[in-house]
Structure formats: C-alpha cells, structure tokens
Image (cartoon, rainbow, N blue to C red; front, side):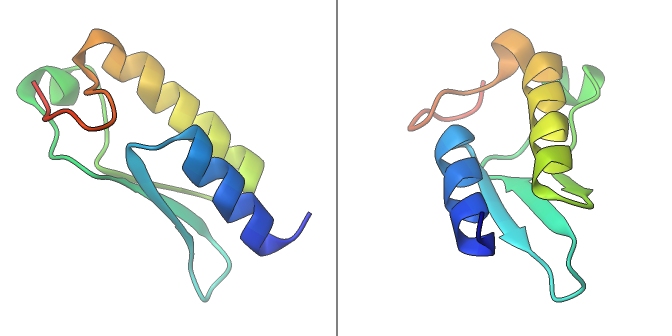
Length: 79
C-alpha cells in the first residue's frame, strides 16, 4: 500500500487526530483538541509517533482506550 493511502486510511479511522509522516520516515499523530485534566490523568498524550503505519494505529487505539469516555467526538469541543 502506498504512503499516501496509509495516511488517508489512518486519518479516516482516527478523525480527531492529524496524521503525518516525517522526512525521517516516522509516523506521527497529534490531537485536534487540547487534553482535559481527566485525559492527562488517564495517560493520554497530545502527540504520538511510531516506526510504521500499523505501529501508529496500535498507539492510536491505545490512546482511545485510555481516553475512554473523556474523548470528544468529531465536531465536539473537549470536556
């Protein structure tokens, strides 16, 4: 699968994040909204990175799990 296709697929799957690949080849994601105190306490990060697209997906799933009910839905402001 092409680099652009990976980016588009991950961006669709995780709409609350901006996804990109650095010039060094690392995959990154940063949240669209600041973290709430509850999200910080749950171990959420504002920005994450990984070696490859699947590693980034794993980290994004972990972040969603940590955020749980504290995660805003697309189009909503953070709690």
